[in-house]
Image (cartoon, rainbow, N blue to C red; front, side, top):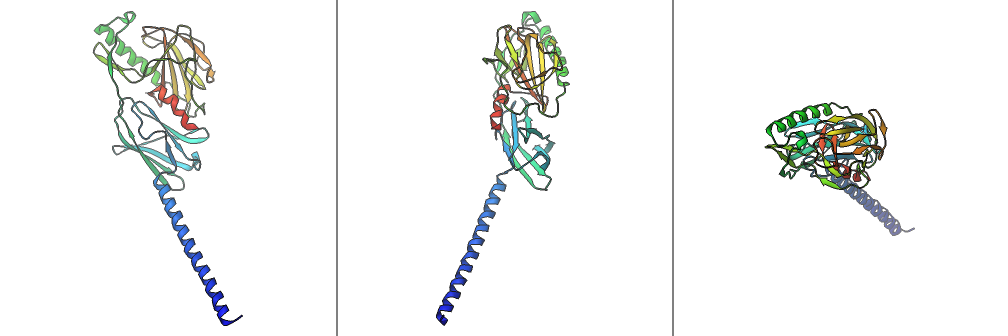
Length: 310
């Protein structure tokens, strides 16, 4: 091999090493940029909505890389006040249900998660104001009619009944892992959640959804759970409460009769009672309320929420 040939070979080897180094360095830089962008997008947190409304439930999930034992702490911050949140397992993945009261203050909130490997991530969302019209509403003659005395009795007894219902416990872990269903086989909604009823000058919010149901229509549990209360209230009528675990409870009001006694284990779709016209009611129907961590939330939005499990 001549001297020129040896010099040419050395130059070729040098160029190969040089461009390989440049390419490798360039590739690492691109990966670093990509990782930086992913980090800025909070890869560990997935929200069902960035603009939930008052009275709705926000579903918070974590991506496939996160397990429940990876999470050290999750907090929700609003107006410089941080509230710790409880993480549960839904569909084999860590998740959080955040219910918002119908009259909760709108505004931007920050969800912050800390992991045991000392990594942190956060995401912000905005609670939007809900449209809450007010309509005039009567008191049934069976409950005294439109008088001040009947209104005062209504308010007093509602407060007493709601206090009792607020003490009902929920199993820490969910009994369910898939979508919820409607409480009737043919769900026809006749009255919606969240509007105000002006009753003799007192505005009361309708914190549930009414379904058309002739007397004796089978009413079914919206998911697996345990019957934790049965009884008859002056205003809510004959009532069944089912605990679904994880802080979720469903309430079935104005029934004509009850099929499932307290402590009964029910599956999604099991008949728990039959529709009626008891309590504060003008016609046969079913009133469904859903509570999440003690707050009454929009049942229809909650049922639709579970499409995010897929």
